[in-house]
Length: 370
Image 1 (cartoon, rainbow, N blue to C red):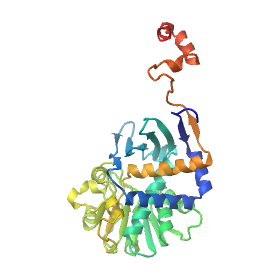
Image 2 (image 1 turned 45 degrees about the vertical axis):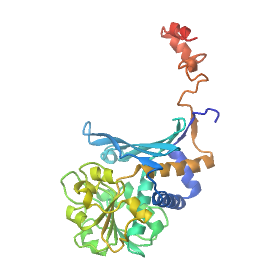
Image 3 (image 1 turned 120 degrees about the horizontal axis):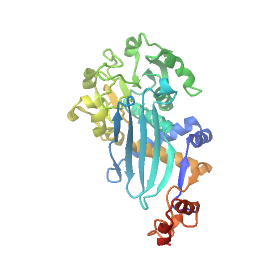
Image 4 (image 1 turned 180 degrees about the vertical axis):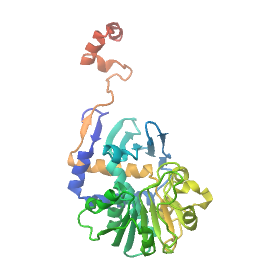
């Protein structure tokens, strides 16, 4: 592209083409490997990140729009913008999470990439849980429980299956119609059938070695699963609490576990950790993957996964790398590229925009700068 400030736009069709070429399993494997490697070698002097911020609102209905920034020093800034509206699936047939990631060059400040991030968010959340399950769950095959059968459940099951053999899957959801379709939404080739047991799920907890909670409840409504009769070394991936006040687990269960936050300051605001003091938290995700934490496979562990902006950057870079290899995407000139960087109206002269200025009575303004 001749325009030095051109932006590569990558939409959901481009991501579908990439995954069709690479293969869904292979793409998930690459993402898992990238997360494990990048977070396992994380250096705060090289990567700066901020906890997400944005607008939480109740009008016209409960929702939020937030932004999640990360910078690789001397290279790239990533900003994922995400909207969360839990009523979307039932009321509009839309995903509850809608997201876009933008990448900026730190040399020029130019916007280099805008890419789909709704599917990428689900993929990287599943990949992060898989990595932490592999490190924290007891060695060998796992017996998996899933609370909440929506979009996140699909990628949780898929990603974990890429690192661990799954002996059985038991799932529950408050909406029977969502639970009934979970098996059909999983990738082909998963050898384990999903048992839907919404009535007696808590009775099955003693048989589970890993639980993924992919939902949450309204503020004050209590836990989504009873873990009182758990195995002593149960591992939980808590991925559904993504809003201040939203939680999934019982406070006593949290205090009995080693809670591992993905981003400490963020988890204290909107994760399971928001009900704990900082000194009640265990090692962070970074500490665990860097090997700076003691072995925890014999412990009851909870991965408090609120979503790390660094994970979004890793996912977006992987997507762009494959898209460029395949020649996918649309190049657009969103940012002005004048020959004279001091002339803000240069790009208006000799174009259709000039005619617009003339017709609106601004010809004198154009002449003054001519």
